[in-house]
Amino acid sequence: MKKLMLGNEAVARGAYEAGVLVATAYPGTPSTEITEYISKYPEINSEWSVNEKVALEVAIGSAIAGARTVVSMKHVGLNVAADPLMTVAYTGINAGLLIIVADDPSMHSSQNEQDTRYYGIFSKIPVLEPSDSQECKDFVKLGLEISEKFDTPVILRLSTRVSHSQSLVELEEKEKIELKPYDYNPSKYVSAPANAKKRRIFIEERLKELSNFADSSEVNKIEYANKKIGIITSGVAYNYAKEAVSDASFLKFGMSYPLPEEKIKEFIQNCDKVYVFEELEPIFEQKIRSMGLNVIGKEIFPVVGELSSEIIRNALLNESKIVIEKIEDLPQRPPVLCPGCHHRGPFYVLKKLKLHVAGDIGCYTLGGFEPLNAIDTTICMGASIGMAHGFEMARGKEFAKKSVAVIGDSTFWHSGVTGLIDIVYNKGHSTVIILDNSITAMTGHQENPSTGKTLSGESTNQIDFEALGRSIGINRICVVDAYDLKALEETIKEEVNAEEPSLIITKRPCVLIKGAKFDFKDYKIDPKLCTGCKLCLKAGCPAISFDGKVAKINDSLCVGCGLCKDLCKFSAIVEVVKK
Picture 1 (cartoon, one colour):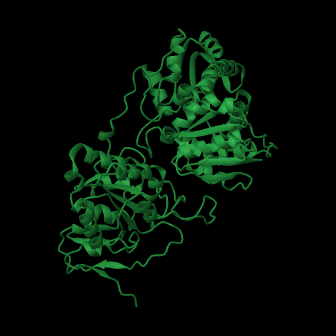
Picture 2 (cartoon, rainbow, N blue to C red):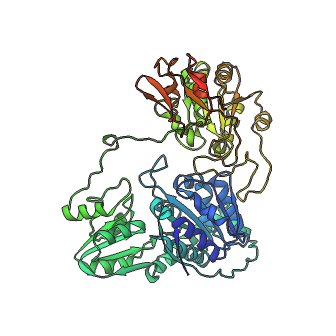
Picture 3 (cartoon, one colour):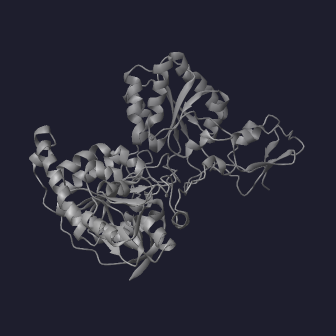
């Protein structure tokens, strides 16, 4: 039976059919749905981990214990997991271990572009790269087989377009894969220098075997047609190239590391002119050139952003460098915080107090844009707290009194805890604000350690921010209603001036949480009282606009949080009395 599936859904189906028993992940677009789909298969023990490093460590333990295992994350998450990745490449595995990583070319929802193929080269482990949903499913199975055959973890590299596009998938029955015996083998799995030196030699031998496999396997395919033009490509770029020049000859890499050198030589010898069309970095191109072979690549194809059929068509037609339009030349339409968003009140106050704000990754990153403009920096998950301490280290205690760190609840559990401990341990004075909206909102409302629910919706221990803060030695801890601007301002003013670390927790659930209860009301503008001062616009709520010189509330957008009412100095925003 065939079914239309998202790439991420097909990955989950592949995990099911391949007999995967354990799946771990930290949510991150474009990979999030993989684990959500996997959780629908009760045969697979799946969970959200607190971060990608922990997710991979759990997965490594599971694989050594004998269970076929998958772990999913986005490209920047692999940075977090890089420490265990580099060592499990040495130790190898027992049952299959597949590391599924979704890259985000053009940065649709990411702070940078990365090419995960480099991690395969860096760690010397194989990388598979599907081009559609059918291959997403098939390559999960293939990856686990390669993992077990060659005693190696395997990376499955996806991209935003592969993860979020749909194509037909042939559904098959679940394979009967038995749990392997636990592999008690300290000389292999204890990566102390004496053992690691031996495994280092094993890695090189394994890489030779994988190279031979790359040449002999049909995962890398030559498709001859018009031999005047040959195109070497992989992943979604293959689809773009096929659409642009369907009559060309193709060498399609399903395994993008290590590469099939004999197939490459054969293909180039049989084609008049060969182009390398790859998304992001010139990895194939550089390897092929190092073999002494002549190809055309990034001299005409861009190294920035997503590729497309139009890009390859224009490049081949003009034989000249495609120039990517500078982002500042394009009209900007950034996303905004939702009407009634928990984060709007805290950011309004921080802007009003003119504080330096070290920001973090999440919905609240939007507080760095117009009209709030309340964030100075955003680097990576959990960085806000350490950076606030860095402000103080560089500029002194008085600067710390003009600075705060803001971080979301899920991001705090991901990698903010250690930064907070560092402040306490090193006698810092920073104020940290945890924006607790009771969910992992940016990636689509996943549970986290403070929501009291697991991935499957089961009740679990709800970890308490206040208790944690006290346990590590923070004496000043305040909990504030995120919609109470007066209390927020008074609390922040007091805490930034304290001569010790402070923890402020702003509470209110995300307005989009299904089933969440709010005591919101309906509001309207009294045109007789509205002076047109536009102070209400400073909160950046999309439900408020101006009709001429008078403010206007869009009833279809407004959720009735009342924040604008508190801002208005002329009492022009009034509650609608229901009859």
